[in-house]
Image (cartoon, rainbow, N blue to C red; front, side):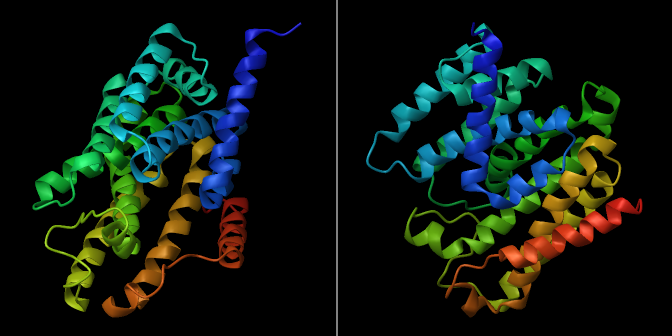
Length: 281
């Protein structure tokens, strides 16, 4: 006889499938988390991907209506503790189990809504608000899971989690500068476009990202053991991508999308595994 546990498990599998299909890097990193945490990080990623697909992919549909539906359905799922949408059902399990503040979810959805109409960020105050909602709060949701109810540890590490989320998002912006402008008609970095990106401007952006990375690393090393290895691996993946970006000239940045190939990801995984095995992580 089927029970609610059956639906819970199916919903978890759906979130895991979404993660695996859309991001091999995060899938590998999540596998290195403790088994108690994996399904919940998959749940967060699955929810985030739903919203991201609405604003970035579903061009032939009414995006605003779809985002309204998702916002309402998410609120109802968390309040009622069930959803017929498996992705939202697995997400509400995580939100309720780890007492993730709904304000974080609302900030995320607010930033996604900005992508529907806002095409340019003219100052860093606007950009920082967008990054907080689109990336930093996702890091905070994951941190709530990793800290497993330890509020003191969560509050201690929250600033570093935000810096890691910001670094990841800024790298995405820099890597996808051409795609964002030509396909989505968006310009995230104030005063920086495909037409005026210079080596000097690129270096300034990289220095800002590097500062975020350094602040994030300190926090990663203080994470609870269950979550440290997986987060460290995600950090290393993005650091490898960042280093590839730094080696490219501003002109070359626009010629071909930069990515970290699977063989390099495997090397990063093996190196991280050795460090973890001997207690360096």
